[in-house]
Image 1 (tube, one colour):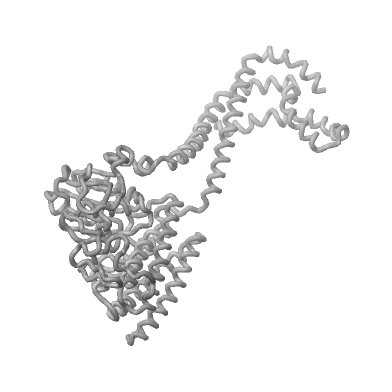
Image 2: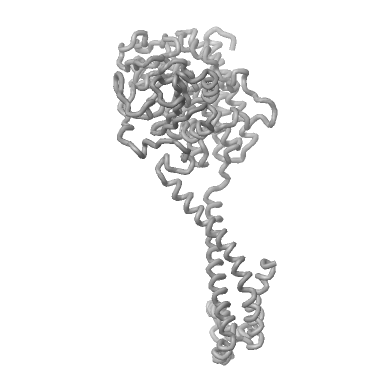
Length: 300
Length: 224
């Protein structure tokens, strides 16, 4: 109802009161002879036209009193919608410029954002041997030169943290569980991981909660495999959390245990070190950074 | 004429004081709301123009970008294994080419998802965007067509010389065929220029590489 009334009422003043000015207009071009002048004439039209006829004006004003309430209500509603659109656009722009981890997509209840809380612990040096991590399981920090293979690998035993952290750097989500977790739940977790690149899973001794999921700088502790936040975490952080975008998950370490392999040539028995040599270790243990043993060119 | 009318105004205003105040308020409200609406519409048009045709999360384009990235990832792995093998030089050169090309293309598809503001990974089953409601095209163990099994990859890693060369060709040819099939699928489902351009180049490039790999097999004394 109100919406039908509105265009009529608001349009009323101009058509009814325009004629006096419209009559005057032919004189203006004659006198001033320019289109620009006509344009000027039109801009003052509504102001002067308001007094075109006292009688008409009384009727219009009375109607205006009635229309004001419904019109204002309607326009307030439309105005709120308009404000919402503007506000949403501003929010989107603002949200997209916030640091990763503080954007809307990453707001999952219970996730600890170490990039915000403790960015200093997220150093990225390649180091040999064991690293003492501040968080268990670690969510970042110095790590071994070899990453743990993370092409949906489900490891049945503990993996060295130093390799797992390197996988996080590459954008992997690392699902860990307390060795006590019932097998049925382990299987349920494995379904989320197996065959999915940028995912890996392993038991982690010393875990305080039954399940803990990690990305570089982010961690979610969960009690059960069917916690929907685990899936949300995977969507929000898998590949997205990479601090080395473009880095892969293949040809990583596949050995389990708590001791990282050595990245130094000759450091690990069985590692291929012969230039142009062929990896002979089952599962393809990679060479360390620098690619000792890789041919220098495409063709040898 | 209008001047005369203006001089009458104060009289009329006095008589209609209350309604005029309300009217003025209504006009101010109307003007500001109109300005808001014009602003919002302008903003909307601007955003609409600035973000044209971005595929959504369930689109074929997004599915293609994600699944082809995974598919490419394995080609990179196989290419790198063959590249550092002690096999035939020409074939290792092809392997090097495949690995670098496909890794770069992974980066391009990654950037699409960034630009489209979509997650890099999906929750839908692999290649669901291609299935048209039919049964999944995936292999029984969940692999996409053309993907080598873990056992096959392990064999490639543990091969050398001619064996590695032959196995690399035997694994990469079906891998490329699977890739071409996926590229064709997205070409039949998108008018996004960037996606079409890259998918077409994948289809063409991989077809030529299949020919090159078959030629190598022949020169190795194998049936292509």
